[in-house]
Image 1 (cartoon, helix red, strand yellow):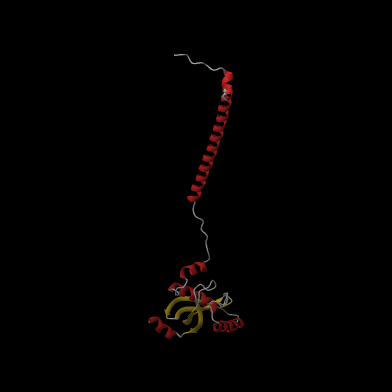
Image 2: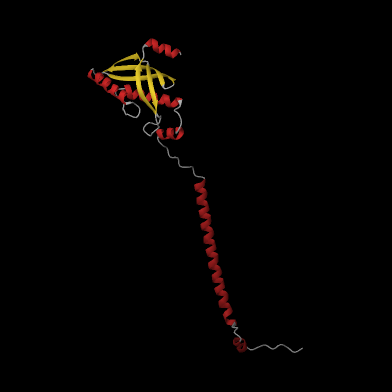
Length: 203
């Protein structure tokens, strides 16, 4: 068997192989690998940071925005008939607007005729330097009429006098609004005598 011949370096170069460039190529590959490693580490750190931020917000207590009372009532009772609680809350507010001298009066709770009656009554009380306030004790509802046991307090300066003041209220339903979340309007307020009041309360 004839021994293999070793080709001289010049012939190897002629065939396109340059062994002197191998170290340079390996150095370039190593540099590229280092760059890729750094990029992968950066992406991994960014992903881990984003995950931590997401977990922090996920376990954070929710933000609660508190709304006005009327909006809660509307959201709860839209397209529903007024409840017993609605009637009670409305009666307290309507009586205050109708009879109290220092109350803020609006046309959303009180009918036009009762507003006129209030103006006439308050003008007379003002002429006599008297202030009036009505305190609600109990409510008895029958259909659209409400009988009320209340006390009427009249004040002249520092002097105060309290009287039993039974009433019959005629209530009318209407659409609920932001200004009137109960959907009720006081159409008429009539005073009852003591005996009539006792009979109705027993019923």
